[in-house]
Length: 452
Image 1: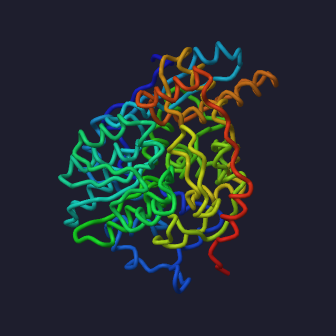
Image 2: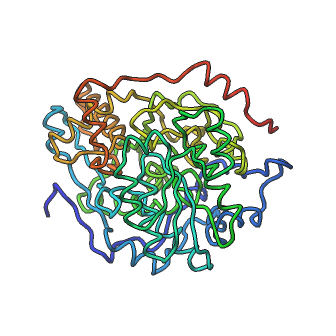
């Protein structure tokens, strides 16, 4: 067997998704109605989401069956390869083994179609004709536009304005698959018009884009909203990544000592790491889980565990999560997919319960890691994925200093082919580390909803 790149066969695509909520030591707190503050009833979610997705959102079942139509759609690119980063190991002179799961082989170039496909499938099955969504760097918007094309749905996307300007070809990709794309804040919604009236040059945020997409979904008929991260059902769908990776690790007789992933909303990290957590929680295995976020948007490392809105305006239910405050406006760093004020409740719970270690890094360190990876492994990572690469490098350097031969694993969640302007800026010394604004953070946190 070639121990550099490990492939599975089509029949090895998982037939169930794994639900971490079934195994957490302390159960998740339910989302709440922002008016009554009572736990949200399932029927209150159906104006936005397909009934099957609502059932998955609140499920405490460990395994959820994957429909055959979804597995068939997955088979276009799944299973994805697991690769040993021998070039990176040599450059770092580490005794550790570094393995990564390569999700950039999907049609959209990232892990995001793993949830876009089932969301489009369930909505189409229930008679929905159009999906609305937000996107930051564009991977989710690309993925949902692709998925909607597969199941005959229209797709309207609100793309964070700073990323819309930085990554124009992401919007081109979405339009190629038939989507309509608006820079957010836009003049298409009351939310966008109000924000633009206050600040014509507003860079936008994922929170604002979510508000616009939710507003459109609530106002239309046969329209639902689709979210690319944060919610339980999205992280559930992503666990095909970790399940495949477990099988590939078994094929080379390995188990990871440490697993690393970038975090913005939590979907790629959760999908990669959650299938390994069950055995760790049972005491059968020992693995550290490291979540790497941008220092400019330090949700896990500087945020507060609290009930908060998922969007800026306050149209969504209240979710208990790590948050910087729904009004927090992250700086316009090139890591658009990680510029989100909140975090997936499942990831937040794993951090709160001591299962996951969060760290925050600057974008200069992230791009330096991406450049080293590209030059040693040949793949140009997305700026978001660079955070995971840097986290893996830190672990490899620790192993070198401690002379420890550990197995380090990370999820390379997407390629950077649409992000070359960011690499140009880094190579031209035009990027800088932008710290979060302490005053703005304090102000945003002071406006958290009052939930006992």
